[in-house]
Image (tube, rainbow, N blue to C red; front, side, top):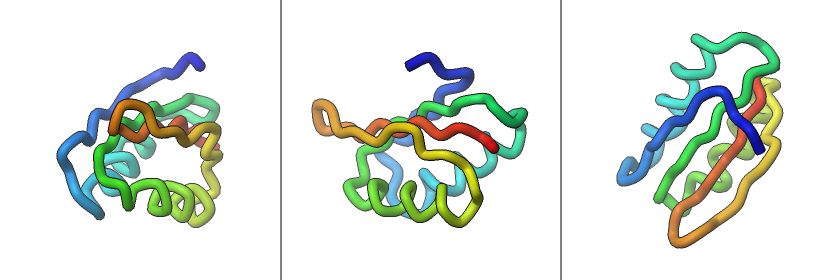
Length: 75
């Protein structure tokens, strides 16, 4: 899926991927999509909870080649 910005949080552990995603999303406009790449297995649960807490849409969450990919739509 197309995205407006990409954040590579590979090698970062909780809570850094979430904090960086939050900062990036704050600079984006509603409707834009952020693609986050992370290597921390805990990020799967973290991004699910983050989307629910912030009201943003977690469009996609998948694991591919040891990396976790998330598409978050800013609401």
